[in-house]
Amino acid sequence: MSDSSRTYLTTPIYYATGDPHIGHAYTTFLADTLARYHRQTGARVRFLTGTDEHGQKIQEEATRRGVEPQQLCDEMARRFKKAWEELDIEYDRFIRTTEDEHRQVVRSFLRRLHERDLIYRDTYRGWYCVHEERYWTEKDITPEGNCPDCHRPVREIEEQNYFFRMSRFQKDLIRHIEGHPGWIVPEVRRNEVLGFLQNPLSDLSISRPRHRVKWGIPLPFDEEHVTYVWVDALINYVTASGAIHPGRPAEGEGFDDVTGSWWPADLHLIGKDILTTHAVYWPTLLLGVGLPLPRRILAHGWWTVGRDKMSKSLGNVVDPLALRDEFGTDAVRWYLMREMPTGGDASYTPERFLIRYDELANVLGNLASRATSMIARYREGIVPAARGVGLAEEIESTLESFHRSMLALKLHEALGAAMDLARLGNGYVETREPWALAKDPDRADELDEVLASLHRGLVVLSALLFPVMPRKMRVLAQTLGLGGVPTLEDAIAMKLEGIRVSKGDPLFPKAEKVRAEVGRV
Ligand code: ME8
Image (cartoon, rainbow, N blue to C red; front, side):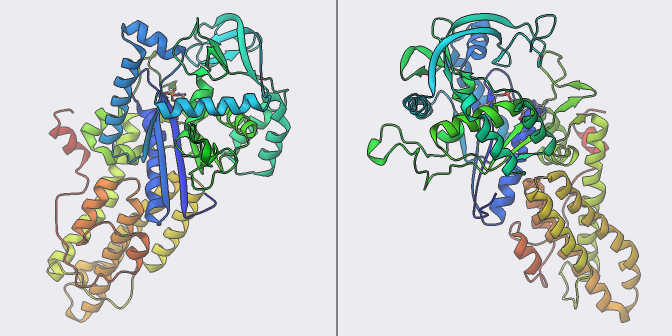
């Protein structure tokens, strides 16, 4: 995010073959939290998500269900949109690769590569995994003849394909990665890509004969072949940026000048499973057409259930909507963002979920209810004037580490720093003992300062935690007597004296209570 006044963030576009699960929700929450954070600091933000709707995998799933591929995609896109709405994800654009605009941009992109002599026709011999939509060579597949990634059987194919001269860009790509240390984060993923690039890069098959795969975008220079779904899918990021204008030749197609569009993306958020496609195929394709490269790629880790990878075939998929029904959207968002060190793996367990939930109830919720009830009891609900802010230094250092961690994409650390401020707030109550101060009329000034400081700390917390828990932080801001969640600048500087707080229900009811109310034990 080199230019802090604008930020274009993307998630992968998810396959329209199954329902969204917690893994998809994780990447999308990351994007939503970052988007809200940047909007809060006044940046113009474009947050893109969507569905990946072409290819053999979709075609076969539609056949299995006895529906047309388009019907399947319409249904799945609807389900993803609904899930994101229910989880308070505020994207700016939901792209579907079957949209006409995208089809045209893909064709322009390929035409450009073809005109630049970067595409040739040849025979492809090798192995293909439909589930991963990936080619493998003989040496990649397991001794049993399975995909090395998902361990499903691969299919041997030999057919005419078009190839992109990816190998030509190997040196340029290595130079780019070496010259931009923060381009792929975390570093372990960057090293993985550099390791991969130590071997000669082959050319990339970018098409399928139409007699085998019908469900795809026909190549502009040979309608008997459709575009390989990964090439089609990656281009979505450019389509949604508005950089390319097919059919408006007077304006130029946009490949030579992206001014006025959102391209290049500031951040591609992806899981580590799709690192090669994003950090090798995609940049070389962009170099091929002459478009600038994205500014940063974050490849996060894997959510597992216990020690197993979460997957439909293992039947251990955690449904984010079921958790939300029990604990509320914000608790799910908090858990996922706080629990996984960005970049590492994390295991979903109900025990860890409850530990994180208790943190909300017992630390943040507790501080809010103590502060508002003491202001109600000792100052008739009105925030008093105070000479100093008791928590000023703590607030300042929290803000500093919060911003540093957010910009380094370490959201778990940023949120940890905010929760630590709430912890310090509770400690401050214990050491200052406002209940004792209230008994001594000579110490009224001190009590004013303690109450005003707690109030200020909570106002700052509502702003800090708004990106991850928008719903609850609106409620908190209201309880604190504000019209809405303030910006961080306002949270620190605005005049709070004289504001009337209210004492509402607990911000996060105790977990046992939540469970009892929904009839589960
Ligand atoms: O790969 N833990 O789509 P997809 C963490 N259509 N993240 C997970 C996860 C898990 N257990 N499971 C899924 C595709 N994800 C292509 C992408 S982009 C041009 C095309 C998240 O539906 C994570 O972001 O298989 C991962 O990269 C993505 O979902 C894969 O989603």
